[in-house]
Length: 127
Image (cartoon, rainbow, N blue to C red):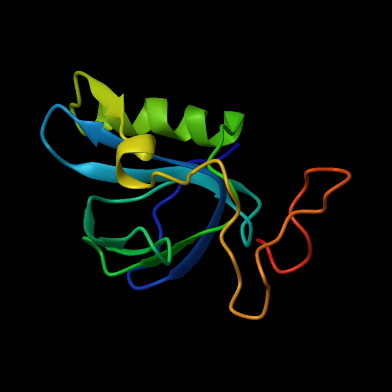
């Protein structure tokens, strides 16, 4: 797994994501970048809308959090490197605080949000 610098102003789609708050007061998206196929950690978050699960970071990148929050081993690897590089001593996972429905997939505009009664799984229209 490589750690690399990203371009400013990118559009990023994260799966298996979380939001972390550092002891410096900065918040970061951590998750699996579905376009690049590896773990990703954002620069500090400047704007975040929990209803749409979209945000903008310090370097101008726009993030879309896809599906349910979760854990990704590649993203955790990148997070460990990032906190050392940025001098972060401690951090807290603030996902549940910022996104109360983090266990649910985000409803698409075209979906009705109902779950399949037999499986309990979201029907089409959930991401």
